[in-house]
Image: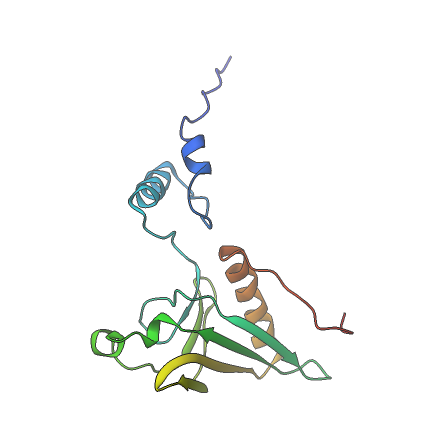
Length: 165
């Protein structure tokens, strides 16, 4: 007869971890996640938005507006970032130029756009808007898969426009 293993004593600690936190696959990953949480490091993300192809993920969570054509073959995703960290005073000097918006999913790769608009208020960058054009049903599906993961990792929700189901 097999004896049941006692429950992990880390459960109160894991409940107090900052959200979001993905559940690690093996015990060594649990130890890494606990150490990172105790040290105040952010949880590892699988869906990220970046302004440089190999750069660090953007910390500011954008407002995302979606549009889709009547035949549902194409669409757009408009990302609006209020005071993104990439517009910091020394960001360009330390990390290089902004080359576009890269919507990256660990499993499916990246979608990207170079259609970026910067708004200034009293000579300082205030917001950054990026428009991602989704040119096929496949790109639309990939984007929606990305947004599901991104929304889950950042505790976001979806609101439909009035009169749209």
